[in-house]
Image 1 (cartoon, rainbow, N blue to C red):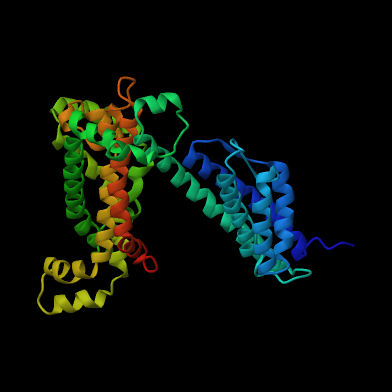
Image 2 (cartoon, rainbow, N blue to C red):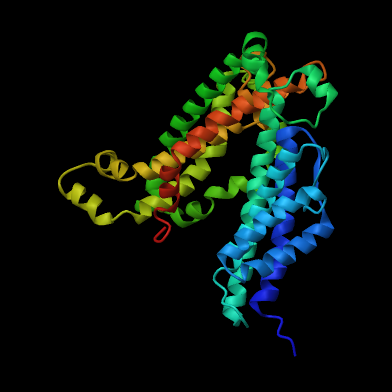
Length: 401
């Protein structure tokens, strides 16, 4: 009986799957970069996948030689990716070299831990886990990178280019500074600087208000003993069980009656309602993880409870406070529903509300994409710069809290 759980069969199967992914990645990437349609070839993916899987079982150098050989003969019409322009020999050779390198190299990395011959259940499962992990990385990277790339490249186009070929996401560097015309026009003609200033002000104020209420509230739940403490602790996040769209009409009516609609003050008052519960929940877990003996020593030295919080608890809680601040800032910066519902005056628009106003048939599409890039890049840079603080703050207190 033929044993199906051998390295050769496992590698060949993995090779087919991974070669399909490699061909798809390469076709999409090259199509976006050049504006020419490239597409995967299922028949040759099957053949090359089997060859790649068998090659990696023979060692590293056989795998490298196979990748080079497949890349060289692929432009003859036997490749895993078909090119729209067969006359571009150099471009097609480079494309297939990239595709076969990803295919063979990925298959080799997936099956490297498996020994030649029959595989044990543990060895077979290790290959499957590596394959699924690689597919997961590719999938989640693609759903994040591709929309952002399309958004960025579209913002560099002009109206005639979009009308001529809306699916051409290549970049024409010959345009020079004219590439950024959409961004210049946003700030010059659409008051985008005002939108950014409003969003920055509202987000910062929301962070301060949220911290002012959530720090003492979380400390009280974590340290003090009072009636209903357990029920309050469990019900902190109940507000998130009610969809915001359900509360939209009551909020609109109440703000219209009180004169808070269409005002920065109204937005500043309503945003903390959505951020304080999550801040309370995050901080109480951290406070519970802090050693209570340190605070008790401060109380014995004559400090008041507020002094203990200010001089002992807060300095020890800086990672958690930083992560909560970043999280709250991102919520306020990206919030759309309340801003769209409550703001009508363009001089008071937040960034998301201003971008929504660009979604019109009268405004070129590249301006909408440029606005989306402007809204995304600052918060992305802020998150990447403070990621270590956010990760540390989110995980701190998770054991005891």
